[in-house]
Length: 151
Image (cartoon, rainbow, N blue to C red; front, side):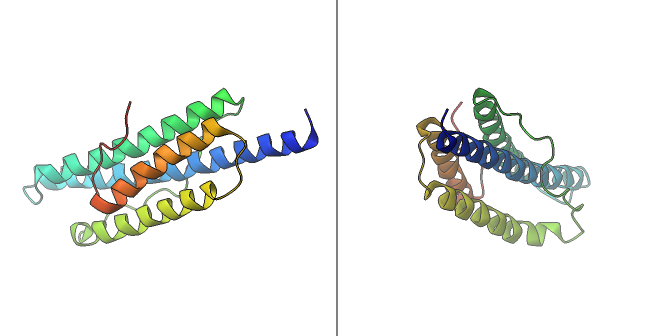
């Protein structure tokens, strides 16, 4: 293996590890929001549809993480177990602010994937995985809903 090939392989592994961390952070955040929504539904303070919406977003982020982790394993890497910051527990005003925060977070994800995909790639399979995830992120950013990822 040439030095250039080793450097490229190392770069791809590092990028996939970072993508895993980012997606795990997103999944944690949506899980925290869904848990808070479920408590509010039990108290009669939120519609059940909101729990479903947040769970769908969480499921998509988990799917992104699974796809990235699988690709990392295929390349001989190890998915990182850390995943961004632990989300703060949502405050009492969470229903008024969650959509703005979700839009900010999704826009950051779209920008990150766009930036990564603008780089020169020699690994077409990894590129295809990242492009599919980018499409899901764009849909999430547009609609703030889940169920965009295929099995």
